Length: 299
Ligand SMILES: C[S@@+](CC[C@H](N)C(=O)[O-])C[C@H]1O[C@@H](n2cnc3c(N)ncnc32)[C@H](O)[C@@H]1O
Image 1: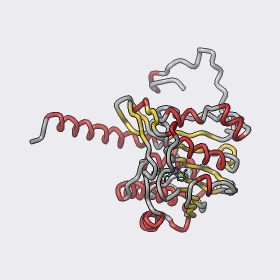
Image 2: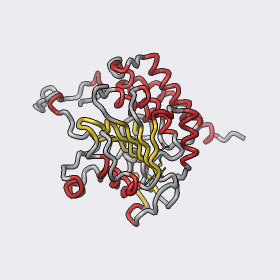
Image 3: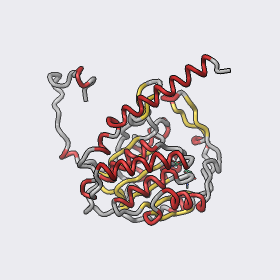
Image 4: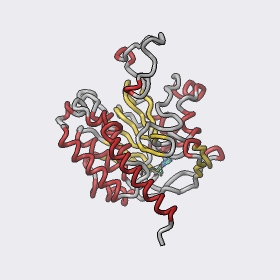
């Protein structure tokens, strides 16, 4: 028999789905902006087809990240001017759901997607990495060696069936073996690696090749231990001789999916040496910085 709590849960789920669908034009405003992709002749029709393929792929391939998150990254890639040479990098692909989707946008932009993964799952976590605090979701995530395992054959098959295999180059092996020496300029990176030690290795080798004003996304936005890495002055100074870049969405992710405490996601990003000269300067005088109720907030 259908219990009242089941019915309530079903209604709540339907309500959340309706809100998520209604919010898509807002959370994907950058993706649907006519300027985004114009330089690659990617207009509204192509974007709708790409989005539909990503939804289908999310459905067909067991995937840890959502098509909405993939479309946010697609927007970032479509906004890179074609004359800026560089590849896209994915670290951590599991069964290739995110890989297939990122390969579609890489292919549209005539860029290569370099995919780094052990294809044996996680390495053995250090003591510090065995659990991560995810305060926003009131959870503790735990990790074990070989979890999230998928073979390279399985991932390749998924990319052939659902993505653009011609755009993808695989680098099988643990990051500390495969990433040193990687020297392709990179215009966007996606780190979905679970462990902080894995993220440190990936960042150490990616940051030097990431182009200025390019985005590096992480899919561990809500993990306090992972968000902390992007603010860790000592690590950045010692490892990369630079200042920590910070993280947009640290602790709660960028607001993409509706949940109990508003919109959130596991996706966050940082920008390498952002082009601040192009940013608007807004004097914080208290005159024009107060809440505009019509826009439901202040920036
Ligand atoms: C959470 S899964 C990726 C999920 C995938 N992006 C998706 O959306 O479905 C994490 C992946 O990172 C890989 N990984 C983590 N640490 C690694 C390391 N040090 N070297 C190679 N692969 C690693 C694992 O093998 C696993 O496939």
